[in-house]
Image 1: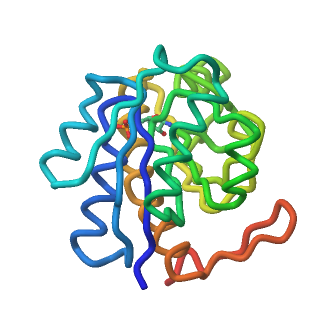
Image 2: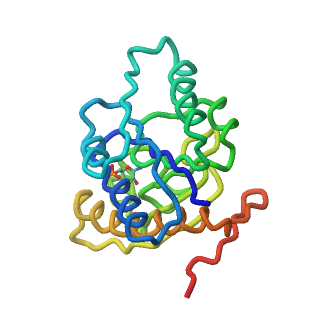
Image 3: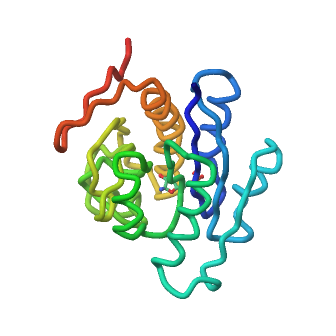
Length: 205
Ligand code: GRF
């Protein structure tokens, strides 16, 4: 049976595209049942249309509270019997209620080597700090910010000539490689979590 996936987005959706491509090419045994955005004009919703995937905009201003907003998302996830929720540039913190309801079934991609540089503008933070390597991390979502168990990481070197934009591009290539990999492994039931440690056959060669 193929994994039913929901992708939550807020922006351009390049990671969403990498997931769509991996599904369309048969790499991931899954189907994106719905793409949910908190931004009406997110380019990710345009990508949904192009690939005939249902795209839903849930307007934050139509919900009284964060809990209400998350309940609106959960309603859709339940209707569609979603097995995995992928955050792909989704710019909201999920409520503990949501995180616990879908415990170990929500994953996120983050453009740093966590636990270094959680939060926003992390490519600039890595440059400002002066680290020589940064990277990309796929992790389970817990109640904190970018703090859940780490599934896959990829290391990216920092060059003297880097700007946040140049570095972002280099990291993004790795994001597009490891995010579909993690989803593939999840869909195949090959991810084992023991406390904070996550065991996967990645890299598989
Ligand atoms: C990515 O860098 C991702 O790691 C971060 O937000 C950005 C989203 O980019 N969480 P995109 O919308 O997938 O192109």
